[in-house]
Amino acid sequence: MKLKKYLTFTRAGIIEALQFRLSTVVMVIGNLLYLIVTYFLWKAIFASVNNEPIGGMTFYDTLIYLVLATALNGFMEMYTVWEMGRSIQSGKIVLDLLRPMEYRKYLFWSYSGGFVVQFLTTFLPTFIVVTAVTQGAVPLGLNLVWFMISVVMAVSINYSIDFLVGTVCLYTESIWGINIMKQVVILLLSGATVPLAFFPEPLKTVVQYLPFQSIYNAPLTLLLNKNPEPLAILTTLGTQLLWVIVMLLLGKLFWRVSLRQITVNGG
Amino acid sequence: MKRGLGFYLRIYARILVQDIKSKMSYRADFIISTLGMICTNIAGFVSFWIVFQNFPSVDGWSYYEMLFLYGFSLVSLTPVQCLFDNNWSLRMYVYSGDFIKYCFRPINLFFYYQSEVFDIKGLGQLAFGIGTLVYAWAKLGLPVTALMIVKMIVFLITASLIMIALQNAAAATCFWIQNSFYVLDFVFRFKDYAKYPITIFSPVFRFIFTFLMPIAFIAYYPSLVILHPDEVPLLSWLSPVVGLVFFFLSYKIWMYGAMKYSGTGS
Image (cartoon, rainbow over all chains, first blue to last red; front, side):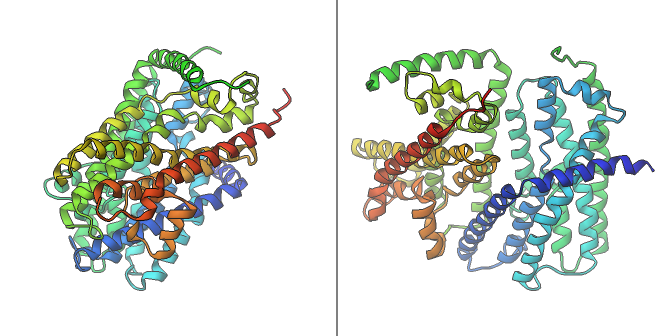
């Protein structure tokens, strides 16, 4: 079975992630603090409009959206750019390239264990707490299925962008700068910092045509929509699928072209 | 042996020049990092702007008042970025044993360690922060007097000590625990919360953010001195003292950890 060799990496990743328990505690406290700040901030913001919904979003909708966006971000952040950048600078990448596995796949699957752990320890608890606390603001029905499908595609798009940006490290010595730019652009244009519903025109329309909104806005909109039209679901998922394919091909192509350029320090 | 401030300033200038020379040999990295820093600031500004397109105010704070606070936090967070960036590498030095090299110099250990790295890209943030402050200052119609400017500078400098202190203490945890990156990262995220007025929080968290994690002293309390000169709370006047005290404490913690350091034996 072909999948088995990939799942070995997943298993190793899970074991590795479970090693660092203190870090998990610190991270949970950090996230709690973030949630508290977000809660009070948006409460104050919505108080200025007497808690009227804005752009179709109520205070609770916004809160759930942002909290889950953060939780999603927590488990989608793979530090791919750092990993690639460091391997390129140290020369380790040569060894990785010699592996009987495509580098792109190797990197993804060796991180996948972290996904599983992060999903179970960060996203799932956050989701359950949010659902319980807001009582009924998160509809529980078929939308969960669409959400899951959407998240899988979001992970793929996010990874493709990471890989694409990581490839740039073959040309530059900068990792920090490249990575921070990527992070900032994705978080802003995907609606993870401010929901896309609040974006003024024409910015909103422009952002809809970019791949970033497929990472956070698409799954979260599918999750929070109480009575979705089938067409809307189809469009959202279809757009995502399109971006999955486009970004995958772009990433592969850029990697193949760049690999010819590679110069690695001897040693 | 006691040495004066002049001695340390001269050494700092020497090390600074060397550091910048070595950074300049990676010109692309320097340019990209600076661009990255500017992108971060622009994105922060854009999210602010988007929120205020939909909402008139936050807890009674207008757009320009919030901008002032934001600018204040950017400027007061610059020194920690520029001057104390080596804290991020501390755990690596301690872990690998290379930290021992700092212990053998006949100058202050803390000073020598922190002086080794100057993060130029922080200057982009400084420029952006000052720009935001000036813009908000003008739009709010605040008076421009010599006294105001002196106050502003004094409060900015002392406010910057808070984040430096928090980061020093967080970095110093690596002398005791293994995986201290998470502690540092945890504390580093505080800076993002500095740009909000503390009054949005419930009393419990107001207390926590004032006395336990003194985030409110990074921008909120000190900026009130300029923003609302008629009704300055006592805590605002105290903020320079708080900054100095926290900085001193963090220095002591850092040095205590460093003195305890026994190397890796290699």
